[in-house]
Length: 263
Image (cartoon, rainbow, N blue to C red; front, side, top):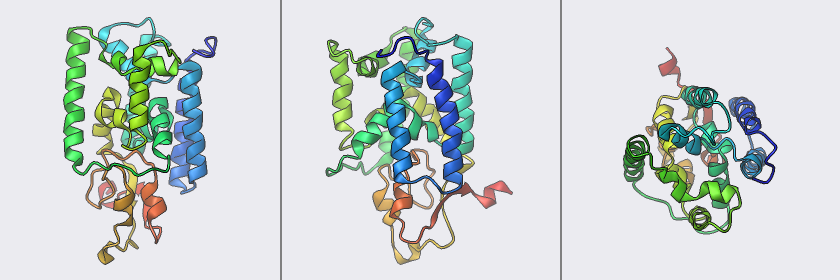
């Protein structure tokens, strides 16, 4: 780590505090691109400074029974992991979108102005992600294999350039310039759990009554990197990146509760 004396609990406190700030900004429709970039940058810096909160790594350590590198007592870490599952159920994937350093650095990379490769069939990526999650559980719990170590994000944020795994994540990061969040969408075990929870999120991006989709606008759907901007989409893979909001010509996308569901 760059600053070994800074406890990882600081990163967890940041994640919890920033989560509620972002939820408020979303609800008040005050989150703009500059503020979004600021949170992404801060989260990335925290990743390099204290390697926390790296929940994919922590959920793997808990699964294999290795508590030596958790960054805190196992009970506390487990409760925080559970807390963000509950928060995702209420507010959507704010943590994945802006606060996880692994996701944040991929999001920043994807914002580079180059031609993007958009995967057409999101069902295939979702199915692959869930299958990988099952494999992760079996390998971790049954065989105590730390499969996420081979992705190198730990070596990357520790700046361990002598490790081959550092370059494994670097390749993923370069890929994320063209493909939206490859680690998050295909391999992250914690993200797989949060994606299922977010299907029933109380708050999420929804179209307002002034939507002009009857004119076959589809501006939001064209901009969404995960094909989740359709009216009937579950928002399972929505990272609240706000590209749909920024693209809408009539400001018809809001972060709110479905009134029918709320009754």
